[in-house]
Length: 181
Image (cartoon, rainbow, N blue to C red; front, side, top):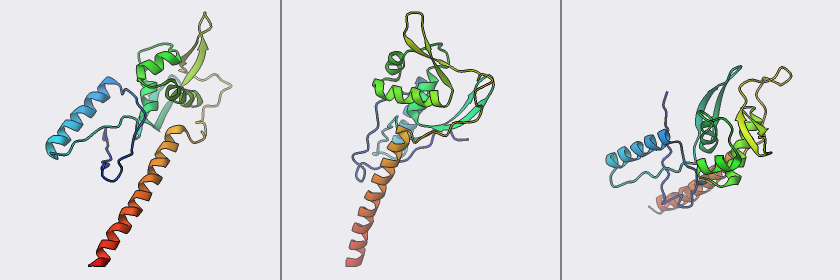
């Protein structure tokens, strides 16, 4: 199975595509950098700029009592990856480690709370922290939760509609040129 898939977006047709700032985990940044360098060597003078917050990540999350196969945004994947070797993290710590603003981190944490992969806990001094929820209690539902459309899905839909509008505009331009000949 492929680890990384890319969508090549030309800045000539989609110049306004921007993602939210996020710092991908080190291993992923290294792979993306290598991928970009190889692309540039293969397709010179073209350059591949990775937009870390766009795309999808397929994850398999193994917890004590369940395994989740999910397709999530890179922001959500980055958020949950912070908990691989960590215990409890505050929202500020998550935001700092992800290199994004608190609102972006809050949406990512909310996603994992709704999926029952993380849970909220309060430390002795009353600070809210987030910890992995390794096993569900007997009275909690083991099925996946039907979530409303999250922020990244809205962003993906916006990009899709923006792309479709641009394709129609370019298509009509090309058709006009073809019809002239």
